Amino acid sequence: MVAETIQASVPHGVVCSRVGYEKKDSAEKDREETDEAGEIKRGLEDIAEKKKTLNDALRILSSFEANMLKEKENLSIDFMKQYLEYAPSQASELRRQLHACEEEERNLNRQLTEWREAHENALGVIELDVQAEADGEYLFGLTYYDLSAGWTPFYDIHVDSLENPVQVFLKGKVTQNTGEDWKNTEITLSTGNLQRSNNVPLLLPWLLRQQTPRPPMAPAAGNRGGAVNAETALLEKAALLEQPKRNRQPDGTSRNNSVCIEYRIPEPVRVDSGGSGGIVEATAVSLSAEYSYYITPKAENNAFLVALISDWEKADFIECDANVFLGNSFVGATHINPRQIEDVFSLSLGRDPRILVQRKQVRQYQSQKAFGNYNRKELAYQLRIKNGKNTRIRVVIKDQVPVSTDEKIKVELLNLSGGELNEKDGSLRWMYELEALWEVTLDVAFRVSWPQNYPFNL
Image (cartoon, rainbow, N blue to C red; front, side):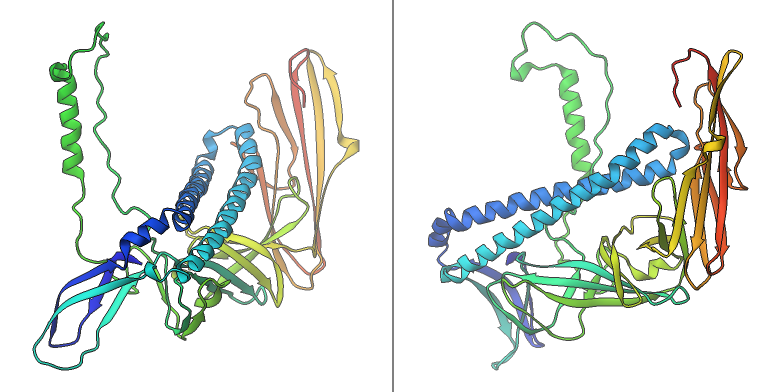
């Protein structure tokens, strides 16, 4: 229980002047908590700090990727390639470590629950000072927050067919280690976080001054240079002026809270203390979508079904993992990241093995010859995409040609099969509507020239 969050609701005709919380047998409890329970709590604090660090790292990685894609025109091809090879594996490793922390946290919470159940003196007493207009029996309500209860969100995403909307179900796995089993309990899930600081970050003055040589001996504490004292005073004054005033009113818990989202579960549920948790459904929403297959044969010979959702704001997406179902079959998992400002939300639904993809180098067009003082090398590739489904589909195909950043290395494009070329990064893009069992063949060819005896190899 977080004692500072205890609130009392009183009936008409009663005034509550004070709400207090006193730990029962606190001295004996403190002595015992310095041993086993204290060690468990320190472990939970360490886990919370590690989870915060991992979540911060994931947010930084996601933010960096968004900025990189936004500024890709100013980045080198080598840098983007290295980053795209690094980022997915790094994000996967961070999530793996985060899941391991959550499992360890559940084990520690289970141990703490067992300890509390064996020590009655871990209980406390809530006291109310009230005044009533008349004698009688009155019904009081108490609310408070308990950090040993929580929920883990995830989505179930269902696509019945490519003609129907996307069905999105937000669910939560509810766990609690309060020492009491919850029976027929009304539950509201919140995205708020009691352990996260709500203070606005402060920017202190960025002061530039001439660097002066330090004297051979530092002056006494009471006789420091005036410039240093003035700078320190200015920093302290700025911090005091910008420090936000503490709001003494309790946070609201309405559904329209502007800083978090709350989901009221319509039916009472049962959640046992220390159990594996129960699954509840928070919301369900139907989103109109356009479906396309995205294919990048140079990277992977698979077609990825993507739902492009234009009205995604009404879903109030939160960042978490998602299970994807096509028809009645589970096809894989993805990750929802709503931190974007694009008009269209791109949701990857997984690979479709019925779309056949092939990219091969055309040997008869591969050559390397010396012309005068220059070497020339021609390369050609053929891309084949076949729709093995019995329905019409839209495909977006991507490939690339090299881009020279050296004036001595020349790239000449020979055949792009009508692809849309981005001259800054060399990316190619085609879009086709493929009828059932149809296929498309694309040819990409280019020539690279460079001086003889020049340190370059293609």
